[in-house]
Length: 345
Image (cartoon, rainbow, N blue to C red; front, side, top):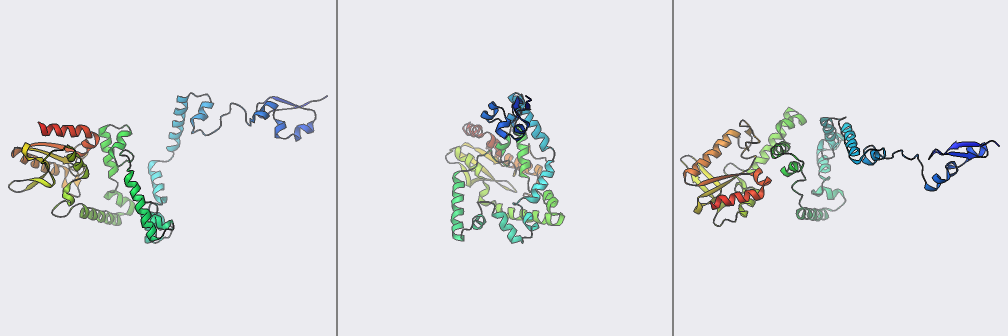
């Protein structure tokens, strides 16, 4: 008697049928061998399933776990290199719902575009209004959202605008300082001109600079006494009784100028100056010819001014210590101990 055979599609073993008709009309269960039908195997064993971007795919192909991870990294790198960073950035900027230009291109008015951009963030009242809340309810929701954010601040290493972010990435202190500085230069005249054109770009940049200057300082004094939160934090941790700081800063006058000093203990003849990296142009980050658009001075002129200020204090018999903002951010405990030793020496 003639036998009709075909292979099991799962394990490739031979299946026998009594008639040609039964072989051709058999359902899926009958077309498999008994063991495959019971186990539910649908594909040939050994053939990997899943994405080439997953390490399990390569492990099933016989790679070790380390080799599989390396293989995935190579494929991801190859895929990401198909588009340059500039191209990806341009595409992102052109379609980002956080850009006013995106909504203007869709035919919205400037006011409507501004509303759409602001409605993307829970920290804006527009977000809650778009959700359908009344103005009173939206204000309450906004207040609740801000309260939660205040109680759960972001860690200091989660944003590229923070120095610890780059240190956590494995960069050296010097590399981290440069990357941190470059990341903070996100609103420059060159970038405004590149984005908006020569005339409109310069207008937008100058407008923002004027708003910033009006907010930070006026013609005669720095708002808030010129003290950053981080410098006050450091000085308070020194726990020095009778120190002059903040609104009671120490002033020293020479023939033509008056200088004020951040932290002074008159009884010990000690002065500590806290220099912000940007405001005093940290030498490790800024070149001597860098022009400080707010102070209207080059970095070298700022350094000369600070040196004159230090020399005057020393001429009056004061010991002098300079602490840089980045130094304190990187090594807070060591910096505090250094200041305390300086005050006790």
